[in-house]
Image 1 (tube, rainbow, N blue to C red):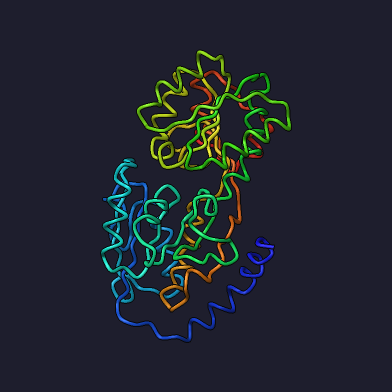
Image 2: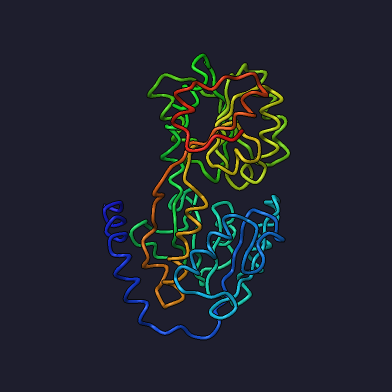
Amino acid sequence: MERRAFVVGLALAAIVRRGAAAQPLRKLFRVGILSLGPTSQQLGPDPLYAPTRALLRGLRELGYMYGEHFMTEARGGDGEPERFNTLATEFSRLGLDVIVAPGPMLPALKRATSTVPVVMAGALDPLGQGLVKSLARPGTNFTGFSLQSAEATAKRLELLKELVPTAKLIAVLWEQTILSHWQAAEAAAKARNWKLLPIEIRDAAELEAAMRTADEAGAQALLVLGGGILFPRSRRIAELAAKSRLPAMYSLRPQVEAGGLMSYGADIVAMWHRAAVFVDKILRGAKPAELPVQLPLKFELVINQKAAKSIGLTVPPAMLLRADEIVQ
């Protein structure tokens, strides 16, 4: 029923947008932007960070002029999850009209505010993390997009087995905050009679030990279910996987761009671009509690050929043909 309501919400989006366009804009809006990239790449009307730039492009396409209709308060996590709580608390006190933030930062924002509207630019598990009460009717100050990452976990395992068909044991890095992702992996493996080695990460300092555990157990492939600890440390995980010569599957394109081998998941940049529609509706008076959470329009397969060659792995030609992007 929730998915049906979501589809209906999409169908009505254009109608809602035309109705909202008739409502006048007030004084200069303040849009808060939290991201995982460096703060220096978030600033101004033409930021360097691709997701933030996509959001501002979306706002321009909706008629918003930077400096005339809105300004931004932007901060980056700079790959340091320990800063998320501080940033969220700071943003909750700035009197912002709306905040746009990625999945790993959303739990911190939930703890920091129950009043400032938050647009989720890709929630890892909006229901499981308590960000919304339902997808069709969030019922909180959060709305936006779900990554549907848990739902895509079975596909990630299938692709990893296609890449390394001889793998008898697949190590899985996961976090308690996204327990549903591990549960999805466990269920998929059980249905296919595949063996997994679960390695829960509670602190970033455990990464090296986790990879040693995978090596000592004889794991032949690695599935990374990245959350607030793992995602910001994608580069380090990719380095450790390469050192262990472990073919690794990740959730999102930025993890491949950080050196990872392969990812399957939602198009993050496209999601930030579409987040502008939520920002527009909220600035015109819509309540986040009543705006249905949307799902990804597209999942993309990204393969890093350089990473494959570094561990002596040949990617099957059929898989390369299916890839949405190949990083050379």
